[in-house]
Image 1 (spheres, rainbow, N blue to C red):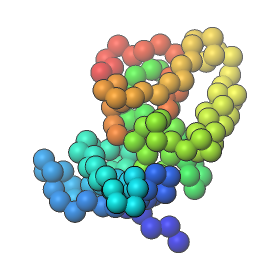
Image 2: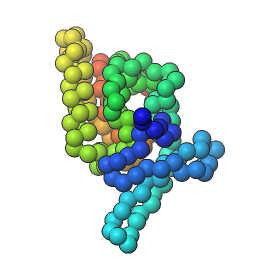
Image 3: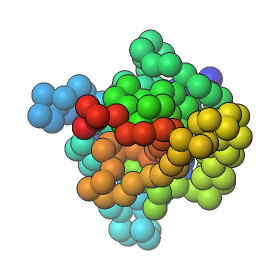
Length: 159
């Protein structure tokens, strides 16, 4: 049985993620605290204070999203606020902040899903343009690794 922590699987790739039981800026309880062991005597604890849409909304069992693909480790769905005509997001179910913390094996699994989704596109979609991208730092809109698949032109009213 899998135990869910605020919608995400606890990370096993870089330490442990535990719910952080306090309320920051009127956000729901259950924030994540990453604990990393540097050596036997040194432990670093860092608190991610940003709202994680994927853990707190998209990965919930009752999430109102249009799924494209799902297995035990990965979820792909249509973006709820699309930037392109068709905008799919591929995420690990394990809470991982960004590409720098992503285990190579999980990156390979995620890219295999992206590749399969792109292989299933028909020629008109490919001709209209496809972008596959991820962001780091201030360009990352939520503190959870994700890959965008953007198909077609950007929408006029996109943020």
